[in-house]
Length: 120
Image 1 (tube, rainbow, N blue to C red):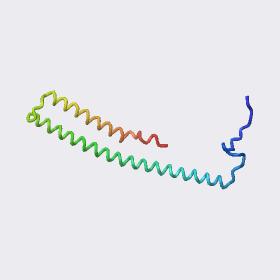
Image 2 (cartoon, rainbow, N blue to C red):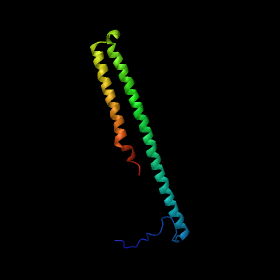
Image 3 (tube, rainbow, N blue to C red):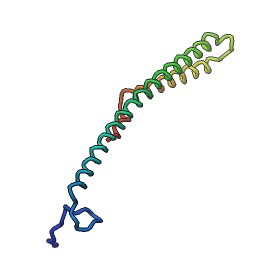
Image 4 (cartoon, rainbow, N blue to C red):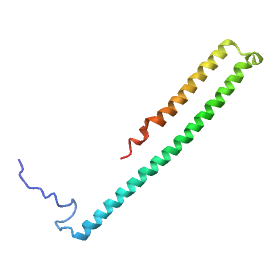
């Protein structure tokens, strides 16, 4: 077993020269600046995500409203368009699935908060 004592104060790739006080002060200031920059980036990310979620909610609401309006028109005028019962059943089934899917996707992103978990 190797019982060599390791010099953990020495930086890799450097000679055994000791660091002067100015180097340590500059390094400390760099760390503080990096922490401030990271905090600023996190806040910016949260603000951007909130804005995008707002637009996504509006887009989904408009899309669902327009889609349901058009489907309602088709169902009400099904005699005029001569749509069979099978076509109406398929239309209503796919419409229901699409509306529920869009709502599920929007709600999962809006209230899950999973997109912020990767921010460290």
